Length: 218
Image 1 (tube, helix red, strand yellow):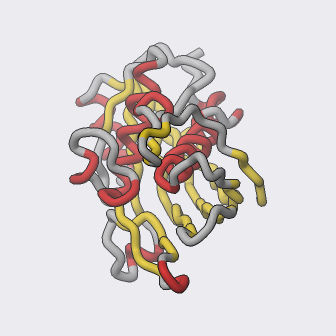
Image 2 (cartoon, rainbow, N blue to C red):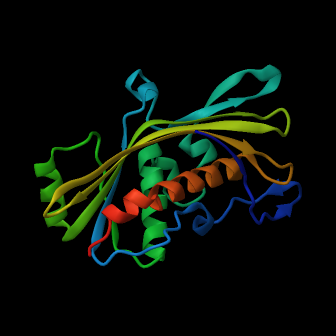
């Protein structure tokens, strides 16, 4: 599905520099709450990574003469202490968990390299006293931005969303695949445009009607 997103954010310009958007503005904003602890895991299965790219890779920036260079977490996403040591999955986990907990959830990060068996998932939930688990499996999460002029850039995502229940096992498997067209503004930085595009996608996933239904403890 093709969407065009105009990112609106409050920015502060000081000596021609744009300050990074705050952690709260970067983090997911759920429109509902759950009653029990929830495990959160982002599993990186991007084809680019499987073919040799580092898990810190996030996209391409076209610099002078349109030459593309790789961008990684530490170059474009790192705004908080510890971010520079995170890979993409860990970065997304942190923004999910921070936003969920700020909104009244009890969310716990779980680092996983691959989708585990249900027996392992049940063990993890028992160890953490969690009733549910949300796993995002990244098949694609990629942007390509041109730094030579203000324009729009593409943000491609392909995510398998899995929800598990401690007693009932796997409740949901859903794929969300999109190309978002991010409209840039001269008053915004490429960093903030990317961070807010990430937030918009995480919001869409967490607030998806089927995900919300699977997360119900009723």
